[in-house]
Structure formats: structure tokens, C-alpha cells
Image (cartoon, rainbow, N blue to C red; front, side, top):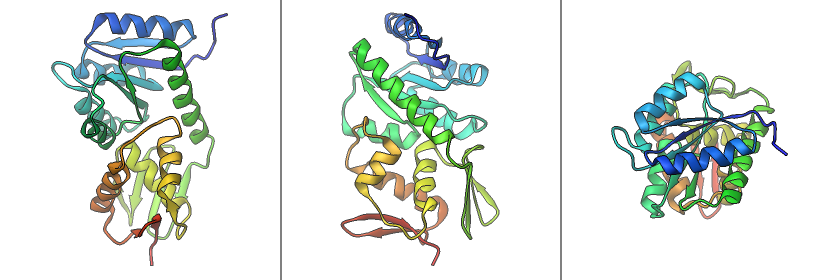
Length: 229
């Protein structure tokens, strides 16, 4: 029996057979599916259809997936879709580059239909849980606006890619609390996602560059904490 999920998914890939395979399996589950043939078209389609989730290849003509992801995260702030990369490239450096650009997950080719549907459902469930939470976090120096996907520090708006946003959102939700690396990976990347050891460090470094060195403290051998003291 066909599902009535109703969420919108955008597929971005330059291989027609992969687009057709993904579209068939997702539409069979009740998702509304749009397609694009390269990164540039993917960015344009994102503006038109405001998808809940984007499944995007990395290596594409005109604009690759990394650049398209960065563009969506930095410029399209009214709604922040989930983004998962479809790639046969399993090297750690490509995963770090993808997460640094704002990706939420990786799905490795060749893709099995059951795994695809399981990944999509898990990503959309996680997004649903996040939207049910309080829309704003406030401390003396920072405001995290979950609804508009904005961070304001001392009156200045700071634009962050999605994973950096979710990381400061987690840390600032409980100032002074030490979050372990495992807790951060589970809450920000989810149990379903396997990431390299350097992933958290890369995102913490980027946040410190934008927010200042003093707000996020490293607790050696344990994890990180947000502090304004």
C-alpha cells in the first residue's frame, strides 16, 4: 500500500539512470520527488520547491555537490533543507569536505532500495524532532533562532552552515554542561551516520573562527562546553 508521507525530496545527479532509480523508489513510498541534473540546477530547484530533503551527488558538471551545498547553506536561509550526499567516494577527506560544507549525511553508491528508504526516513524523523523543540535559545551573548536558522551574537547576525548551527545550538542549550564527543556525534549527526574522527574538530574550529575563541572550551579527553565566563 502506498504511503502518504507527503514530504518533498529533491534528487540532484548527472546520471539519468540513478535519478530514475531513486525517483521510482521514493515515489513508491509516497514522497513528492523533483530532480535536477547538476549542482547549479539543484540550487535553482531548491529555491523553487523548498524541499525537505536533498539527495545530491558530489561529482557533477557546472557546479559540484560541495559547492551546491555551500551555496544552499549560505544563501538560502528561509528554509534549511536536509542534505545527504550520494557518492561512491568513501575517502575520509571527501566526507570532511562534505560535512564542512553543511551536509547532514552520506549515502554510498551503489544504493540498495531498503537502505535508501531507511536513511531517508531516519533523516526526516530527526528533522521532525528538531522542529518540535523550542524555537529560540538565549544566553547573555548569543541567540539561536531555530525557526529562522540564524545565530545572533552581541547584536550581530552570524550565518552558519547547518552542522555548525546545530553544534552551537546543542552547546548553547546548556551553558556550562560538558558534552562528550559521543553525545555530540549522536545529537548532531545521529546514530545512523558514520563520520571521521576529525569531523567534530573541524566544526569546532570553524565555529571558533566565527564566534570567537573564548566561547567554546575544550575539556581535554572528554569533549566541549559553551561558556561565557
